[in-house]
Structure formats: structure tokens, C-alpha cells
Length: 172
Image (tube, rainbow, N blue to C red; front, side, top):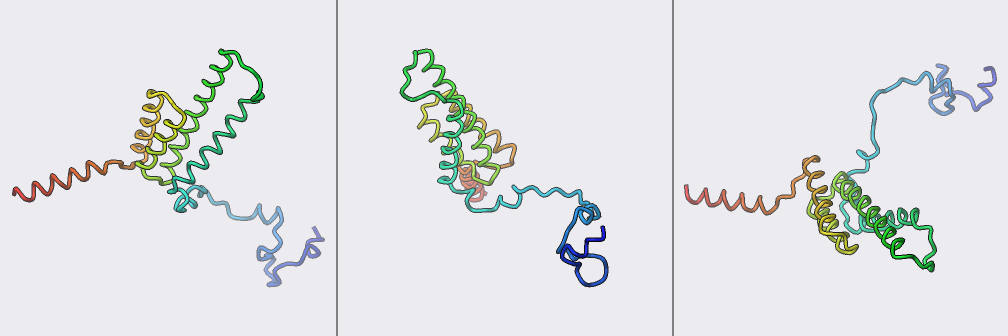
């Protein structure tokens, strides 16, 4: 109440507004409410880092390492039965699959072109010896996400279209 003056004073212009220098809960309650939502992604999406394959690789392996660390609390020196080893490997492949699918989608969402995204997925699948079925499924996810996001990955078709147009132009 009456101690407000002692909190640092007002704006000094006599309008009762403290010009934003000393906001209180009462001031926030009187602030106009806007319904516009601004998402952080829309503000950072244009940054060049999102088009860097190196960034995505480093981020992927850091994330994968953290995710695998949550599941493998077993000491590396402990001997496993064949069943335990198979279960651990299966769990690692599932985590890898999920992480890679999510990263590929995020790469596209943040503006990475389709071709480098496909190459990234293929590289990670190869390095980690994912099955051909899993690799095909992940590449399908990239194609589907690209289609949903309206991205094109058809440079060869564009070249063919140009050739066709050139051929059509020269024959007419």
C-alpha cells in the first residue's frame, strides 16, 4: 500500500505509471493481455547452425549417449549372459531408432534440406549397423516428413523436367 513510494519511486511524470522501472504484481494484472503466441522456434529457425551437418551429428551423438546412459546402468566389466547381451543390444537399437527418427524430423523442421537429411540418416544407420528394414523405415519417415512439410527432394526430376522442356522447346 502506502510503502510503494519507498520501493524506488515512480516514473516521475505524475501519471501514476512507473514507466516499467518498478513493476509489481498489481502492474502485471493491469497489463493488456494478448492472445498472440510467439514460438521460440520461429525466432531461431533462420540461424545458419540448423543447416550444418556437423552440428546435427554432434547433437545426435550427444543425445544418443545421454539416452543410452539412462538405460545402461550396468558396469561395463560385468559379464552378461547371451540373453542379457541380446536384450541390451535390442534396447540400444530401439533407442537409436527413436532418436534418429526424431532428429531427422527436427532437421527438416529447422530447415535442413532433404538430401543432407537423408545422407545423415543413411550414415548413422550404416555406422550403427541397423537392419535394412530399419534403415528403409527411417528413410521413409524422412520422405513422409518432407512431404508433410512441403519440402522437395527431387533435383534429378527437376533436371529431367529441364531436359524435357529443352527437348520440347527444340522440337517445336
